[in-house]
Image (cartoon, rainbow, N blue to C red; front, side, top):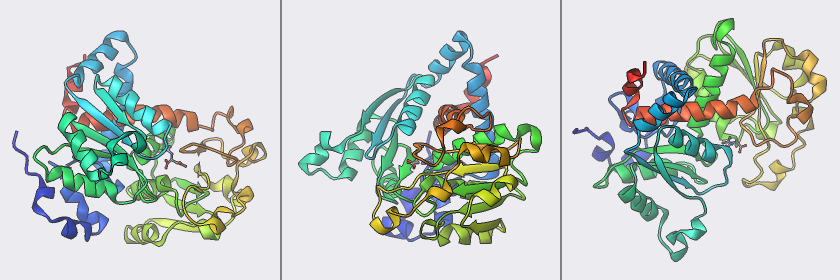
Length: 355
Ligand code: NCD
């Protein structure tokens, strides 16, 4: 079927010069993400549809017949997992999502084992993948690199979709999708995400999950966001400017404990010390950690989240409390990523064939 690929009609320098919100139409096909690169591509209706799809897939997968039906859906597709940065969960989550849908996968996880070591550019490597595969799922340390690759792929003779599995310090849209799915399920019986108070704690300057999730949360009426971090690691101005533009209320705070009783969700993050700056990395985060002594302060209906991996931010003693849901987040990610992949291939309607 002919598809009007918008990224073919704009030069790289013009596209690269656009604001994130202006890039959105170039990344969509018929109003749905084709390349899934930035949180700005997911409006409220898209988020609701994806959450419903994830639940449908999770429900169908409960029986053997259902699981085999799901594996037939994309048995004609092959996907490349290109992870040029360390990953445990996100890699396995995407690999599992592909298995659920019957997709065959291949992987490059260490660029030292690919021809990049012979001097091939990452762009050429990715074009090579596009000769063999129907989608590329990519994690890369360079912010904005996913956009460049999406443009290159769209302007090649064999355009295929690209999914961003974490780019530099800027975005991690699929983690944000699974976080939304987790929040939605957790608050289902208490009025949904609308009107909830959500606190982000830790390294908000370099944590890409918080950046993408704050943008998605701006679509839920009445939410209030609390950014709780040492000054050197506070959330960047570009995110606050977007929240201002959308009329989302927020507060910046430098202490976690006094806020615990107020919050409906607390999203903990680790210090991202693989990046730059030693002075920032030596910041003392002890007052930005959650331990068992904090549990009595936490609302009965509240949830404690973490994108993982964790270090000292959440004491392991907290894990058995039913409000600690970070291991459920991990599993939710698999269903949400299956929903995203199925819908990018334009095949979500085939779920209706399951009675
Ligand atoms: C996060 C990431 O890679 O940004 N991990 C993940 O994908 N679950 C968070 C982190 O590394 O701290």
